[in-house]
Image 1 (cartoon, rainbow, N blue to C red):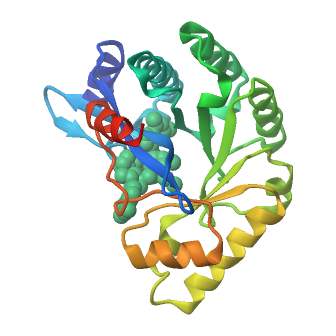
Image 2 (cartoon, rainbow, N blue to C red):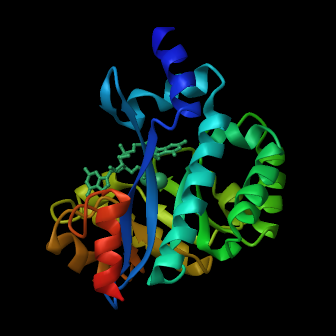
Image 3 (spheres, helix red, strand yellow):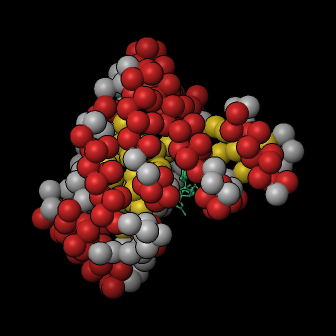
Length: 254
Ligand code: G
Ligand code: G
Ligand code: MN
Ligand code: NA
């Protein structure tokens, strides 16, 4: 409960901060987008990672506040990079499945875009497929409303959640993110390689880009290129970094 009240304070007093991890086109090596990952810079507890506060926030009903803060912060950052001459960078933010329980998220996305005058295609939402979506039909309807705003959608952690293929077929996503647990085994497990190959084929068949997460070695990147993955993200390219450090990478890429 102490953590909870400290966290309420944190959201309104700007103790949250976004770090950014590059997402790179495998065939060109170009940085095409970044994933925003929230951290809590707490004066009392130090730097906290999402594992330490997201599920608490979900339990106590604060996840929509975080979602809103993250969306606004991401849009503000997109505009500020643009104004600094780095062009329009696409930022992917994580959406909790609980946020899809109400259509209020549609207005939050629209407001964030409008507040900073961001082209909608610069904002991507990563949505995890999960059983905790209590009403999948309503979630899908909300997802379609968000999609109609022109933002990009990605399915996060694919393969470890509730992989309902019927749902996948109807999900208007541009990107399929292959969970890092499969990437981990890529170089030594024929099974993991087969699963990754199949997910990439599935993505291609559904006209989605396949993005492999958690790529840590050159060997993994090579195998993913052979298997036809479009994009990679992971420590081999870069860890999640501060906006200042990301700006250095963007300037080098310009
Ligand atoms: O760096 P990493 O520890 O940042 O992230 C751990 C987990 O936290 C990931 O599963 C990621 O999807 C989730 N996460 C990171 N940032 C956010 C956020 O802004 N909102 C939500 N809902 N989840 C996030
Ligand atoms: O679930 P989501 O994809 O949003 O979570 C991304 C998480 O994966 C973050 O915690 C991020 O820090 C972590 N991550 C990113 N790249 C790598 C990697 O190459 N290896 C490992 N082990 N974790 C990574
Ligand atoms: Mn993610
Ligand atoms: Na993921």
